[in-house]
Amino acid sequence: MALSHDPNWPRAGGWPALDDLAPDERAGLALIGVPAWRTSLSPTAAHATPAAIRDALARYSPALVPDRRSAGAAAPLDLDEAIAVVDAGDVDEPDGPEGEARTRAAVRRALEVTDTVLALGGDNSVTVATALGAWGEDLGTAGLVTIDAHYDLRDGVSNGSPVRRLVEGGLDPARIVQVGIADFANSAVYARRAADLGITVIHRDELHGRSPADVMAEAMEIAGAGGGPVHLDVDVDACDRSVVPACPASVPGGLAAWELRALVRAAARDRRVRSADLVEIDATADAPDGRTVRLAALCVLEFAAGVALR
Image 1 (cartoon, rainbow, N blue to C red):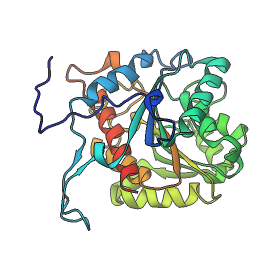
Image 2: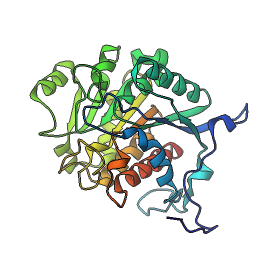
Image 3: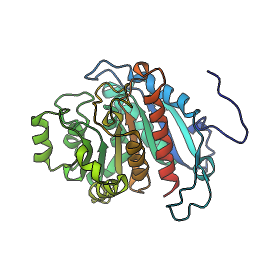
Image 4: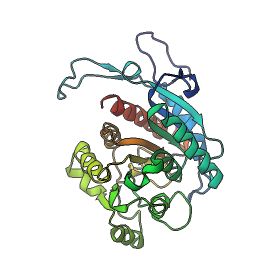
């Protein structure tokens, strides 16, 4: 469907390519498509999602409107004026060891000329290469915050194992915080594994009585305690299945859409966040109204807003 045109209502997205930056120019945020899907535990076409998110961005404007509760919010903020965003395109065939190496290289290259990177998945396996690419030699001091219904501590190599793989790769589990872990979405074995490792778990039920900003402030203090960069893993299946039908593992009773958006913006406002990923959506399985992909597009804008408001 063709979208209307109004010169006074610009549309989000359509950002210039990373390669179009001038030699002395630096951007605030780079998007990178990482369409991994081959090791997913659930059948998925998650590799179709980066393109779908880019298309959905045009349904929204890049403007933040005033919130009378916020200090200094007397005027709207146009993200296109407040932050330079570039698109680094998609990593070719990001699955497998060679694909992960290409992803790490793409992230490192983007961070040479941008302050932050947001990887558009793809399934949750992309977290490993994206985080390692961003951390580089800082792995020993790095931290990880996940917004996810699942521990992702499974054995093997899949979209259910990125947290375990990062720990085995050298990440200190004392600097891992998992927000949104849900009942009946995990096994007792992996719950015990998280506890034995010393991972901080903020259960989904705990979020009912806390503000997203408060939760993320706690998470960042733990993940950032080493003084190194923090990676944010946004697994959209943490949300209630009614709002994310295109997430194969989402369950009823998950996060509301507004909670996910607020958590993402709060995390992105923290300068310790150097990288993030947005994962676990199969755009080909979305509802007719495209609600899952549209939420993902809004999370891209929330992340950009957080970076712009630092």
